[in-house]
Image (cartoon, rainbow, N blue to C red; front, top):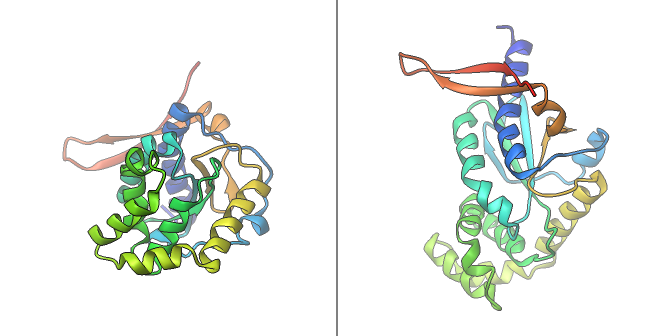
Length: 219
C-alpha cells in the first residue's frame, strides 16, 4: 500500500476498535470540525509512536463509571496499535471531581502520568467513595515509586489546576456530549454514522498473524 493508503487503512482500524466502545457505551461525538479549538490545549501525555501520522485523543473522566468499565478495552487498543498511532488523554471531568485529574497531572511531573492514569481507573471504586481521596492518591504514588509529598504538593499547584480546567473548557467548547469521547486527527468522530456503515474487526489467520477485515453492517 502507498503511504496515504496505509494511513487511511489504520484510521479505519481505529474507527472499528473505538466503534465497539461506542456501541456499548453510547459515546457518540457530534459537532463541527474545529482543529484550532482541538489543538489549543495540547496534551503532554502521549502513548505510542510520537511520530505517527495518526493521532487519537481521548477526553475522559476518571470518576466516570463507563470510562472505568471501558478502560481495559481502550488499553488493549493502545497496546495493539502503539507502533502506528499516537494516543493522547485529555481531562473532561463532567462529574466535577477534579482531584483525580489533578493527581494524574501531578504524577506526570514525576514521569508517571500513564501509570497513575491506569491506577485511577482500575481502582475507581476505592478512591471515589472516600471523603479524602488524596489519601489514596498518596498511597498510589508510593506504590508507583513516586514521592507522595511532591504529588500532593503538585496536585494543589496553580499550573496543574490550569491544565485540568483548560482541557475541560476545550472539550466543552467542542460540544462533546459525554465520556469517553474521541477525536481522530483533529476531527470529532461521529461514531453512530460510522458504526452504521462499517465495522473493522480483527481476525487471526491460521498462521497466527493478525489481519484487519472491513465488514458492512446490516440492520
